[in-house]
Length: 636
Ligand code: AMP
Ligand code: MG
Image 1 (cartoon, rainbow, N blue to C red):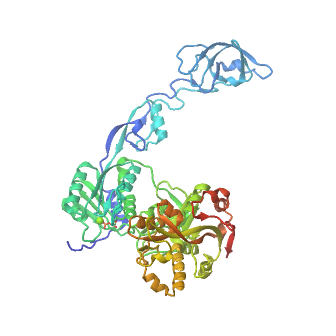
Image 2: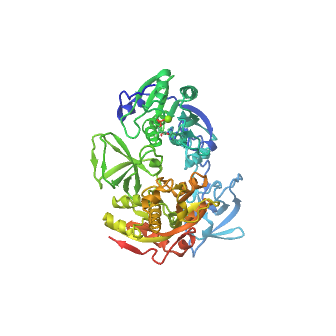
Image 3: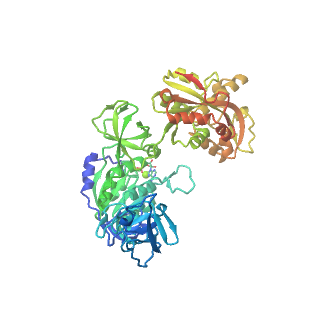
């Protein structure tokens, strides 16, 4: 197949109009209330009964004629004769007349003649003689029949979603089953590279994210997802899956294989088996989209990239499902925020994912290939094609993705298990972006981090401060953190026992920008000096010196499974992976904090925790506080 270009990109508005025209038939079914959570109600629910169905007591006490108590007081109690007792659920008939009363329990039916309930606390009893110390008024402590729900009253509206409260109401009116409405939405993921979560990860494979993220999104809209699993990049296999799904579902979604690359065949299948309504939308993320109809079933080819797939789902598919089930609830809410960094557009309409921390919107755009764009984003800003530039500090409207957990602190920088401990101990909700120390410095400089965790040495061996000076950072303080043992990570049977032994061995190095890589480099420079070699010659003799694993854990994995002989990282990580650790250096891990945040409660709590005895005690092996922990080490 030759490369196919997108023929005509349509705008997102036109795509919205297009899907508005597509009619989707919902399916109604009777659902037991215990299975109805999250379902959409297909018809108005009207009560056949009064709730409560009789006048009932709302307090433990005595059912009385209110006027018998009007003159009662602490000093001049009224006297009544008790003629019986009514527990909850009692069907015995009593009649209260002037001068008499009946003892009554909360929830029990009010006897004839009584028009109020006197709280037991305001009475005193001696045999059947009741002394009343306070007056009650007519109707006091009585819940009238039908006062909660009246017979004939509409208690729930068609199209509303059933939550715990709704289930309570439906059971209170005595219904066990209700009619719910759904649309069946089939999901097919495509791609030879995909494997199912739960399987072990193999070289070159990635986990199928779209199936599960889409299934959950469909449920959020009141639809029922049907998962057809992964179709290989094979026209026959994809066609087969689509044929089955179209027969069984009201809407069919595929993901992947929609872009104009050679292997991208969804478009061709839809074109062969039905009609294509659109191929390509002029939006970022999400351009490669196919919208078609096969046997009258809307069949949407979503982009493969998870962020794009979910964005297009939210824009085009969610409204279709919500309309079909008849729900009026608007899942998305909009909040105002202040854009934290200036943004320059590409002149294309765009949904820019942003994270929200304490009212500020931080662009969270790692490119549409990253699921974490969505994990780190709380919503998006819609940017029109004609907008070229938005200045930092501009108020923006953020469309939220469903329920948003509100992070208290945005922490960017080098990974550290000590940070996880700080989060656990303070109970604060951190958003942690593990970018490495360099990323921490630059995010701080751009105002895109509340705190950066940094462990970057310069050539003199001093940590962090030379970098701050070099970058000319201002309005920040450096809070001294803790020390961490860094060293070689090898298998237990390795013959490596020191830095010198890694010459000629296969090293898994860390990514450029990580403080850990910079530290190894510093130590190698020292070693080269001792050996009278150039640093360059030394590093060239280490196989894999140019490699760049993003995380400590990736380093340990490579060593464990034998792809590499040696890595460099934290003792805590070697311990966790059951590998041998050979200490090479002790480094300083510090916190760079925006100065204006020092006074906010979240940061105060964090500093308090950092200097607490419990924190020192709970740090993992190889990480320890020191005499300067919590001190302001540098201020600008
Ligand atoms: P494609 O359009 O098939 O080339 O897919 C675009 C990108 O999305 C590729 O990097 C795919 O590996 C990725 N991708 C496709 N489907 C999925 C999926 N179900 N889960 C996660 N990533 C996917
Ligand atoms: Mg693909």
